[in-house]
Length: 495
Image (tube, rainbow, N blue to C red; front, top):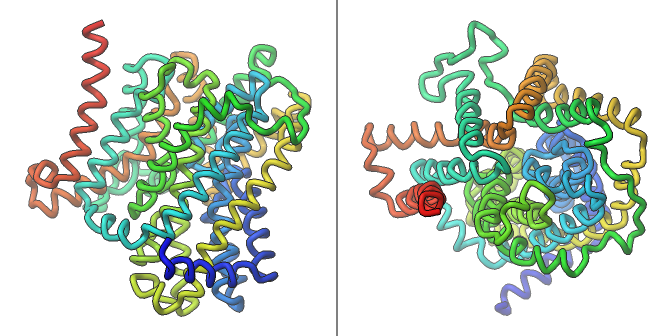
């Protein structure tokens, strides 16, 4: 590191290590873990609710608290994903695929342990990259326009077949249905209602969170209730020492963590992309590169490490456009942009020059916060896993109630509870017929992003599709998307 960078970091730690800011970092880490573990609340709601409490606080301490909730929720969202197959955060949906299977095999501690380790490594590496590469990556992010975003989402959509452990055709059909459901609501360009059938509640579209709670958490409990002996999770009793991943787990996951960190941080720096897209791409990439892809979806430890590294690195990457360009990387960072303006700070290229104590204090606090989260989660994993010893007759109703509350808390509407119940029935049908809930939910997330970017691109080019091939980044991403479809098809044909 250059002397100026060392001096800046020294200034940051002098701010972050004050007793008040250390307390706020710890409070943010604990609140973030709790928020992430409760389906339906989410980091955005938590940050928005706590924002008024920070009006009279020092801006450095306030942003340390709010950012601690933001990246701490990525840690907490893993807990319910692994233990009860219910993602606490949208970015941890993919973790349910292998994390829950590991829990059913009696390895819940190993799954949570490797997730915590991957989160710590990726969060720390992402913070280091934020510190050193923010100006360069911010300039690169500016070159991403609507065509590039469309190409990126197409690449994510073409990888959906790889997320399924069953038929690729059924996974593709699931994704197509998810794209159709994603079009429900108002047209992004004309504002005309689509597929609403006269319902006012459908004008806002079908929210992702109630659907994901339905297809993963609620459906899983219903399936378990129908055949508890076949689907019950093995009760475990762990000590703190037994939570640490084995050497074999670390060896199998080391490259997955590295790749997930790189993918997550790069995707996170793109305004609007977010940790959810990063985790989907990271998991699909890992499955494609694995020598044992058939293990994914059945308890592959890499299937937990890769998306957990990606979503935590993405949360650090999302602060690049926030701090250097003033652009939000997602809904939570959009709230943080408003907070900066409220405190009289101007996010953008001059923030590091005009308010160095604020900017570098935040970066230093992220190093401290990730270390706190590592200790907190390692110490609490035995407590989380001990919840599996609760009798199923008590656990199932509790989880079902939690799902209902989570669906309602998303937008404080009973309509979302009804949506969750409807899609629970859809989830049961998909389970019985062998269709992919993950591909469906992934398409539901990526569909609006793809449509918005596609329509904006055609408006820029006045209807010419050449805009997608004339821009190098967009053309490269579309080429990778085509290759991700053609290469497996050619391998199957040759086989």
